[in-house]
Image (tube, rainbow, N blue to C red):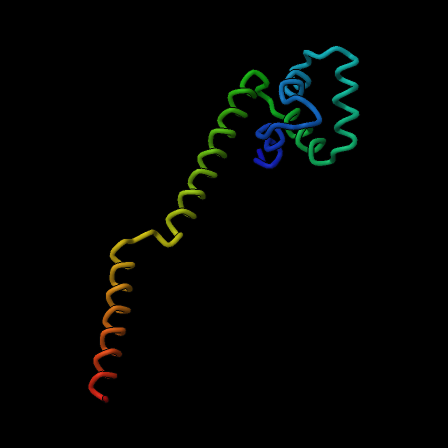
Length: 119
């Protein structure tokens, strides 16, 4: 199954509760709540495609487990990307700052010595 279809359930949704979506798939909603979910899906093409994909899922009882697993994998992927990004940043290295300071100090001392020798 395409992960993009399940991505709708991985993030909080401001328009409709994720639990309501899961209940809709399980057939646990009242008629009024079903119509509310269906009206929301009409306005949201991505959500509509996701729900159609989830409805085709054969093991309905394993759906929650599958969604939780996908959420866990998504969070691990995001954490991995954050760690890689952090490793790519220039790390604070005190020895680098010390070396730059010493080089600048030597340049200043050399300038002063050269000026005094010329006078």
